Length: 194
Image: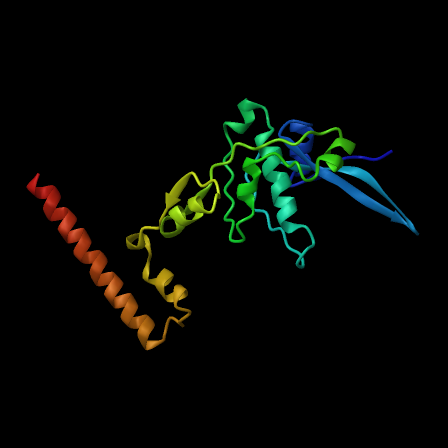
């Protein structure tokens, strides 16, 4: 008899939480000679926060797996989903399609007794490309930009691929420190004038 495989849950939580806080992400495959069949259900613990690494070679299903996890998170009961926020940095530009029902795979979905549906995702695009994406028909919701004043000297050194001891890295550190000190002084003076 197949049993559920639960990812990300320790034995104590398995006993105390039982089936609460789990999302269904698929089934495992069992291969016996020439025959392959679906076996155990794979469930992901969402009762606690996790860091998840999805790794594999090109075309092995990494993006698909993340999409399934995102779909499952949106299908949770509201009392659970209200406590969860998922964020996907989509450098390949594929997850915006979740805004539309998956009509392409309708036949496969029917086999699993599922129907195509759109997901309530919010798509942020880099501020410098927001209008371009919108004109191309990509359903972007909001532009975003990073505030470079929040970056540390370490962030800048990493951005430029420098060693901490490189003369340019030392210069960057000195300049960033000086600028941050000037900002603190200016902010303090403005507050004292109020």
